[in-house]
Length: 261
Image (tube, rainbow, N blue to C red; front, side, top):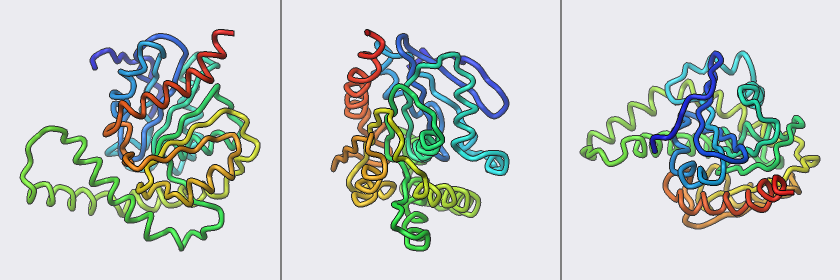
């Protein structure tokens, strides 16, 4: 897709846009980037103006951003780049966790679709989820590398070395920051959220296990939680057509209908 154009930049934050119609703001996951929304955006751009946000937790950052503001606060700053008060949110992974923080703080988009959010159920104490979340982050880092390589041919032993090297480099810096905000997600008060929210996740994705998906739905009554066996953590890339279809149907019922009235 070659239609992306830079909309605006301010410090650590950049907004890229494509398409026409009601605005959908897209937030990427940790150690990822705004371009990861391309497969979904190209399926939405005929009906929506997708604005992909380039956020401080992008791939290759130094993680100093977390000493200045929380993920939700950074996301709020990114929204100020967009002169559009009526918008929907589309977020993945750590970006979806940041969106939960934003919703709990009182931000009310026209709708919010959260794809594979990292969420700790309130009944789970942090130590119960420390090692599982460490393993989940390792898997996310390795899978993210494979997806960024795309169709490039890499011998398995070379790929193994690349994965171990990236994991050894990132985990000491990434995990403490990631785990702090993952832990805090279970303490968010989402009960007053009255925005229509769609949560999508895979049944075997450790970012949102079935029990924690149920807990998120209970904590946020406005949310519709859908889990699918074939969805991976990077379903917005690996099952992009299915994700885009679900998101489009959801937005049609919420955003498009509201604009038509």
